[in-house]
Image 1 (cartoon, rainbow, N blue to C red):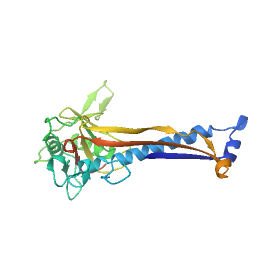
Image 2: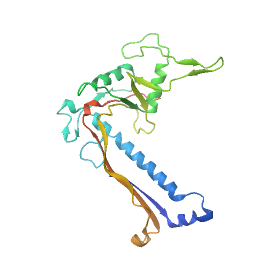
Image 3: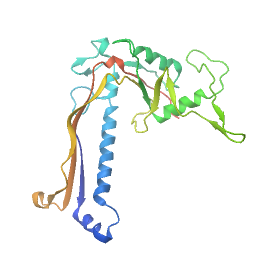
Length: 244
């Protein structure tokens, strides 16, 4: 279950009422609570939570090579393991890493490739910096092509930089709210689902003065949901990636 509770002391309500009101206190607190609930959901979405926890099974657990997801032991069945590309030290995001995960996540099922690649702002920034360097020579795993990108707008303005990335037609996007550093995920949205067990709902503002002898009003938002997948093997993760 995911929930967040908002409390406002009755003194604060009185001070922010009528003509003297500076802000809509209830509305402001509710917005803050909603943002906190969003952060909690995103944090758990990327987490390494397996079966047996009250939280949702996280994306790192889906991509793992061991642990139990959906009552199935990943270590026992290779077809239930996610794809992984790891290292002992931090490294740049390269073609070889992307290509490795691309083919690993196609191995099972219908051979369909991932359709979304998600990483952090820092990894994307480092990837762009590497792509736009002048590379004269390179070895396997290096940058194979100089893609220094500039575009002349007029005689006095040059537009440089990249605003979007793809790999073999798959969008690479950065999630500014990703709570992890140095990781990149290959996702196949045809095999991952958010299952709503109970839609998020509000209790409404409740005055606790009578029921609990407390001088404040309270509102709770709660809901039940689970992240599910029908094929862990269609997901992959690269770790130990450098951040800018």
